[in-house]
Image (cartoon, rainbow, N blue to C red; front, side, top):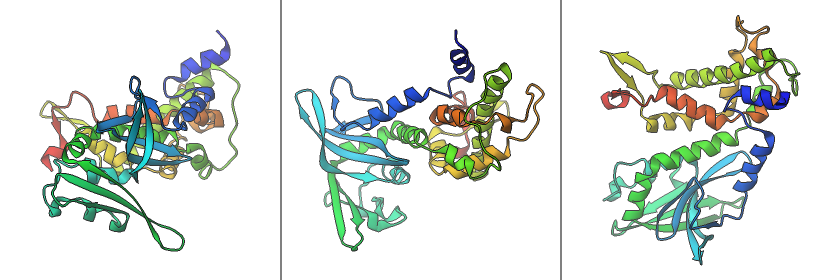
Length: 308
């Protein structure tokens, strides 16, 4: 086994090769078509050839509710649909039930109501309209009509949809650039392989998980704890809501500030093991899944949210 291969194995599942990462990005940039026998992960049917899915464009993540046209076994995207900012989907899909009155429609909850309008005359069908304003202030419109059953399907699949959105967000997050804005000196591109370097970079992933946990705790997400011999934790929906607010700069700053404690099993301080290669191979989406397992343990007896 070569040193390079051995090193990659020791770094654990939170890293991947640059070639694999490039392949994932190329797949995400296809023309949007897919086969009915092989619907890609992260694309969710809600009925009548309408799908919900997330996409990335450079470092930006969007959520789409879009109608597809089927030819043979292949689905092709049509212009009929709207694009949402990830933070908006909680207002639409995170509801307990489909609205039954004007007062229950979520439009007024948006930070800027002018961006999205949701209307219905009979509360059997709903028109979702996205409004964009160009440089000349003239509005353009995109819209799609969905049924009560389709909205209910979005609510049913909200957890999985939100997980896919988070995966997309953190797969394209540029943590290296954010880190460079906080570190004082230059960053090595790579380091000669050694057992110490391998251990050091593996430990960096642990520090990153700890840093993200600390950030989420500061935002209000509680650490699991045992009370009266029962484990209390957070629901995954609550975790996802907090995670969507995380930005690269705050993660990088917290990570950087945690890199200066001496560890008895390392020859150097953790900051000395940071390289550009570490960031390029980092699977931040997998790090987030591991953080979710920490803050949302599967064997919880009670959830903090149920007693607010």
